[in-house]
Image (cartoon, rainbow, N blue to C red; front, side, top):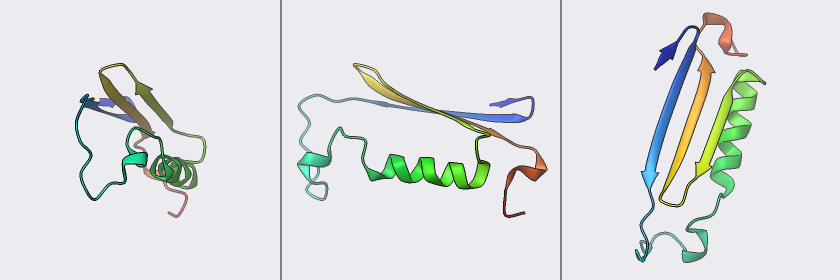
Length: 79
């Protein structure tokens, strides 16, 4: 969704109870905010500095992530 000068992106994943983890993912990594979330936050900070919003919700039946970033031309610090 575009709202003024911002792009708002939301994604949801349902949680499944009693589902066996795939063999390629160690069991102790399931259901934890791991290094991936920290890497995303670090990359957003490098690109957008403090000019973004990342909301991660852990509801009983689903995960919801909303990212709000500016879409104007001078957004990237490497430009």
